[in-house]
Image (cartoon, rainbow, N blue to C red; front, side, top):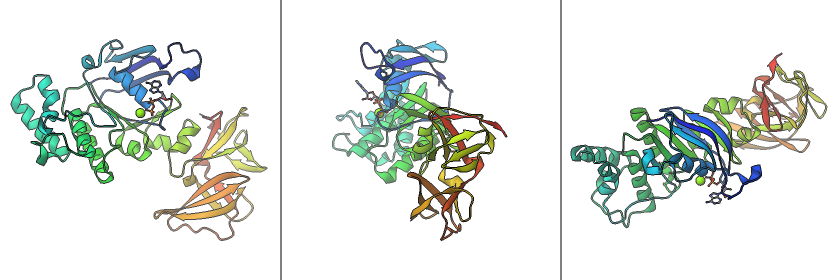
Length: 359
Ligand code: ADP
Ligand code: MG
């Protein structure tokens, strides 16, 4: 198992990159702690696979170094890095049996036959393929083949890291949850460094100890699910994570007060006099509808009952403001204002969160 260090890493698919936009992966410094389970989360095209393939050695970065436990592997081929990688679509040997597909990485390393038999059995159980070990892979469904790919990725205990690139894409929805649970169990048992790429926030938040959020080739935040929820470092994290995402409102901020369309909103903390594109972000969970004269004026629109709570869509001078009303919370019939819990307010300048000081 290994700690993985990315040192001044960047990548462009162009032969002579000049501008920042030419880079699919903007400059990045990061240490993936040994034995930690990470999710790499972001929209399609943001550079997740590029980053993963650089770590595994399928891609040579145009700049920077990759270290495994302080050992420079930047110019080492994939095979020398001792990692397992599972891709979005199955990679199996059609002419081999399920058993032999799973045993392949172990045989390759000259493992003991008794160990191979036991380990393949255990993995087959995890992926629900015990009954089909003797079958040829040819003719199996894409779903079954992907389970074999996953199994083959998990079969070796001695890898430096396990890399998964949207591995559950072709898996049927019932089985997704089951396999994700198995991956977590595997992590508990062996403590591999794991990086799990996904564009699905639920998958990321349920799988990982730490989530690395990418946006347009850049890592915008690394944090626990709780940190991403409470203190999104970038507006992208605010609206990408959450359902619905964070409300963002243009504001003028003076000290501990924001002013939006003439309404003063207490922020709880003091922010000086920020200039640039200043916005406040507040998640629907920290927002409530009120009557009376205090709060931001809104027009109340649709109410969606999603079971555990209601989502109320409102509009404040052309900006959508979503309110979550918990179970048992009354939505006043004549409500025409929203109030924000100061604890739940973040202030952004040019999309990045600023800290503020205790007021
Ligand atoms: P993700 O995995 O997050 O969907 P990728 O890492 O595959 O994103 O892609 C990041 C960016 O790099 C995208 O703009 C994509 O079009 C571009 N890209 C990916 N692979 C190549 C390639 N082989 N050649 C040129 N551009 C590529
Ligand atoms: Mg990808």
